[in-house]
Length: 107
Length: 121
Image (cartoon, rainbow over all chains, first blue to last red; front, side, top):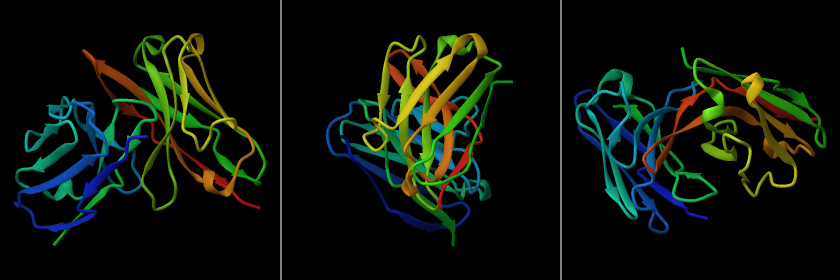
């Protein structure tokens, strides 16, 4: 199985900050990676797929990059509604796996 | 409006069974592969099972293989998860999620709100 490791697991930041979350895969997954945002009590929401393609309707302050084993999600200027937990997901092979999550909180 | 609505969750004793349903609307259900994803209390997301649009391809996580069965009825626009031999560690919110594709890149673009399964005596 492909393991995904996110760092950091917890991030404290302020409105307006630029933040980056990293996701590392235990083996190469090309660009078969997606990012999701989840708020408490809500379902996950797709942000980015194919490592860098922004899902329709997602603000452009979100961006993704990487391929192979290392990927990043960047939020260019944090907004109050961005404080949530973020997950990466690999869809290169089954079983599909998720990273452990990065909880982004207000400083 | 594209929508997925799960139902069938509840409290069940260890060793018991439960059948979850996911009703799809607002899109051509028969054209999409579907998944079940779960989240234990306070934990991260765990993919559970996948079924292709025609039911010809099915995958399970090792943690549920042999105990859970995924199925679908395209005529009823519905996805199902039959869960047998339930264990305490199966306690979670269960989400159904649609698989979409752009060229060869897949992703889960539509999620239901989830249904809660609690396995406890």
